[in-house]
Image (cartoon, rainbow, N blue to C red; front, side, top):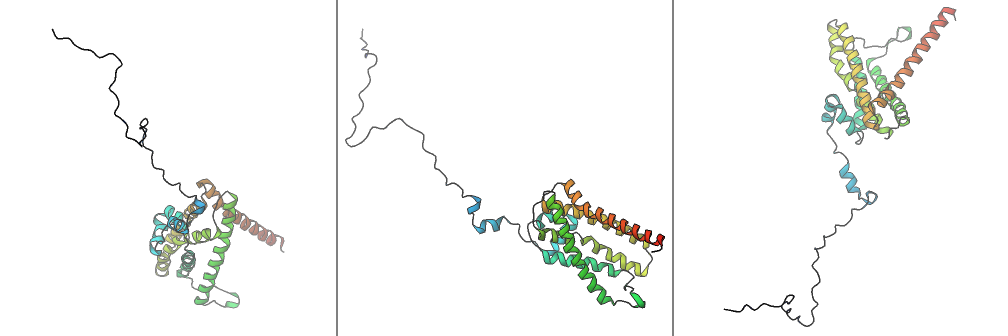
Amino acid sequence: MTDIVREPAGSEEPAPPVPPGTEPAGPSSPPETPRTPAEPPAAHASPAVFAAAEPERRPALSLLVDVLAAPVAAFRYLSKQRHVGLALLVAVVSSLTFSAAPVAYFPLEDAAVLPVQTSWLSEAIAAVVVLLIGAGIYHVIARLLGGRNSYVFMLQALGFTTLPNVLAAPIYVLQRFVNVSSLVVLVNWAITAWTAVLGVIAIREVYGLSTGRAVVAYLIPVVVGLVLIVALMGLLFGALLLGV
């Protein structure tokens, strides 16, 4: 019967000798994850980074189409990118649209008339002046309501809101040859409503306001203007009754 030789418990084979000049390896540890350099703060970003963040400048025709077809995206773009010259041109052309109406002269005193060329020039100048003043009024109101942006973006946005007026030109031309007065009135009301909607969207997107505050900002000058007109008419009517 063969004897089974058992080794005593706890006995281990001797470790191999360590070569001279080497350290015994310690307990294994997970490899360190390489650290990525921290991103620099936005204040120290290069000008090229800020330039890349700005929206790409769009062609004029594409922008004009989007003002009518996709106004939210168009005015959101106009809140960051400048197209002041195009906005002034749109406002002037929109004001000249009314020159296509059958009445091509403005009556003056002593049966004098104002030439068409002069009337166009006066309408263009008046359109620019009204645009500058109106943009300033809306800018102040929007800032008081918590909006944040500069005057120039409101100026160009307000100019683009007059674009629907150009669509009335064919109706005015048709009125010269055919009596379509009812159609002219209907188109005028539709364009007025369309322009008002564009105005609210422009204020909301340019200044980052809510829709409610944008409506309030748009209506304040309108209501004040109507009140002043009614008050002036009341004063004139009262003066006529008193014989002044």
